[in-house]
Length: 298
Image (tube, helix red, strand yellow):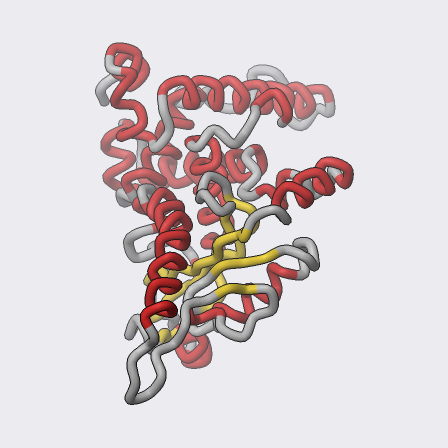
């Protein structure tokens, strides 16, 4: 394996294309995860769970283990290929990934709502700011492995996509520069409007939203005008639809950033129970990429 540490230090501008986040963000993320891991190991040793010198030392250092995890999320290779690249076995590659993806999930809040979940005063301030704009909402579906169970096949078969899918829905700020709330990993046929109604219960009762035609009928939600059967829309409504589309494009760009991590773009190969964790982890990485996570506050 090429020494990735030396490579990205020599070519820091290529870090984002390799891992999905830039060089500075990667270094700060590794520093934070190392500190968390050191505290965990110290706690284990003090309790006698992991005596000093016990067990075989890992072949990969912490930096390389984190690289492996991010590399999988960004490029969605099989664990066999990932093991070849990092010179470990397939099972070791999978074990390393599963450990560090959980650390990423626990360390990076996937949304503003999650970030301020335990900070009532901070959430009130954020809510006041959000109420001054219309939040944009959109959903995305991703193909999953075909379920073995007949009932699960029926639950996850999407007539729209003509395949078995998992759906996630993102609520974004009006400029698409942050993720306000996320629902991840529900069956593909789930109605978008029902997911929005669920998310509305988490946000202010005065909060306005902007969505596509799938959200028509949702409270406090602006949607495009539907074309009447057998007639054309008036010019002013066509103009309004264009304006709405121009505003909605920001959430589509945000979802595009999530899909830059190919694990969220291609057929999901891991167990479906892991989908929510992986999707929310990617949302955390996207927020880090957008500069919306302050390490000093974590």
